[in-house]
Length: 197
Image (tube, rainbow, N blue to C red; front, side):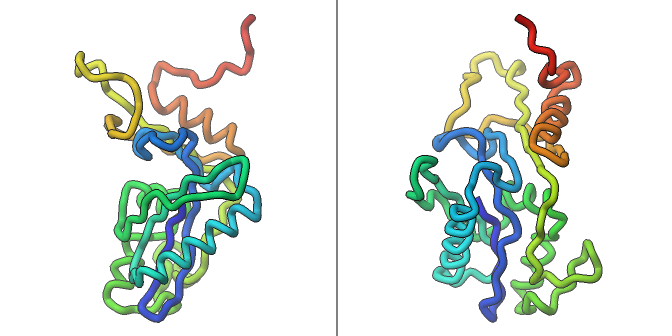
């Protein structure tokens, strides 16, 4: 999925791209999400990025937009499965992962301010028309509290049952994933590096 912003003067950028680890049919709120995407080739990344920019322009969205895809891993065939022309949970994750103040920028865009005129409130130096570039990995893992509800199914699916999430940052996917696993539950040490036979 891609987070995209566009102003009234047709300036638009992609702020973040994220990848759901779980397959299509699992609610994004129930899925492990990684930013930036780890399994896309450069060609796939640019194909989906170009499509995201075309979609926000086609719909005439001024502000923030989230575009979710289903991509066949064995071909370049993809489908747009959801377009949210609003801030969402994914937007909050993208904002935290990149440091790009999506809500602030979206509010300024709604007031008609062009992207190049919006100062990035985080850096204080760059403008909102610079696309963030990540040299680290972010992993989001949902948290459940299902033991309080005896009749609720523990299977994940298209409806969201998670009650929160954790987000971890690491130089590599493995580091971020291990940190996130440890935060999900204080009694869970994450993956054990020593495999027992």
